[in-house]
Image: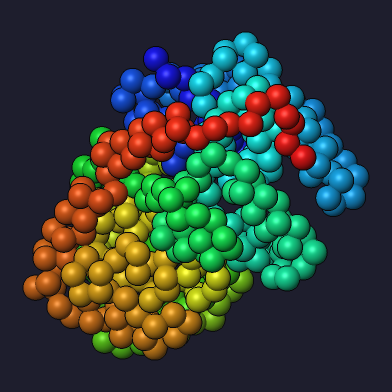
Length: 412
């Protein structure tokens, strides 16, 4: 049985989009007959034992702490992470190392792979320098931005195979000089065994949230996710007065939290549509489907940026799997997932008027709802079901047997 060691930034039992994608990959690989484990770096901050089982998966933890100036601190972090990976390699003897972004994971795995003569797969879920710009913790073109990009380019060049989650990332790597045949696209997906059966609408919850009028359900526009600036929730809130002008009973349900939450709440309180906007804060992951069930349309008004043009989000696919209508901004990451007029509707990014018109048009045309829902569900089943898509990894792993791997030389 082939043993795959996944090298990770963090993992279950921590909850994030990163850990849920990891869980889906590892569980699907188990179902295919692979023996899989994970090893996490210093950024896995949940307390726990040095080897921890979560949801039937085993994760090893790297230990230690680092300090000092930027650059030196990250280099020390890579060194400690490499020690943690090597310990698992010596004890368990995997056949393949499969590292997942960020590049700190990739560089640590690269050191161990070259030292022990193991093939290395490096999987990029996003360019983390662009993610830092998007979430307000970095700036494009800064020294840190350039160093992060350079490190990732180095890992991509040295890895035996590269995986990306979408075409936008693949094309960017090709433009940097990465051979096309080295890159495999593994799209974001939904575990339909867990997320494919919509939950019944909770009428009591709807009443408690004021999502009914005289016992009649209001049309509800929903967003479930993190409140980062690039998600464009300020655009969505600004659009709501125009939506209410056409659909007076419409409501906006915002579930989640993040750095923009305070500003968004203040914006909503001063909006003419304030009475139509509901903030739920963060909810436990096992309750998320209750809020999907209250929503008719899931809206994703991402602003245009390098991050949103290159990277595909997971949430629109979850919404389609739940049988929800999808309205999203016309950025590159959304265009890879949504066909305008068939599986959802796309509107001009950074434009509250365009957002309002798209949402109101959907609410006006209920006769189209079933068609959108069917097409969205079929799209997820055919192209984004983890149970099917994970088989692409078999081709990547089989290809590695044809790739000569450097042995005995530690990576620079």
